[in-house]
Image (tube, rainbow, N blue to C red):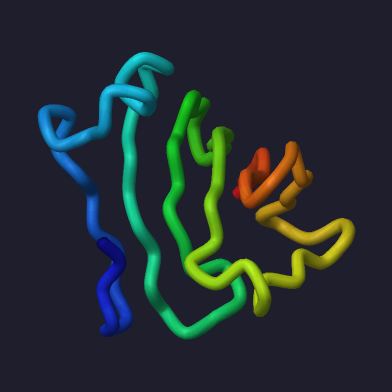
Length: 87
């Protein structure tokens, strides 16, 4: 589902799995840029440049969120994180 080149890909609402659609996110997109924040973003809200929602890393074994960073990530369980981008 994630791409191998440096890019961001938004997924159309009709392509979302039912479990994701049931959460009623504003946007679902994948980031692939070779940095430690590669993964699937399920954006639940946005206000100006700020954004928040769920994040699933592309490679859970290599994902190492940094404390106090922007974006910030909080492990919810399994491979799912809550993310916040303050801009």
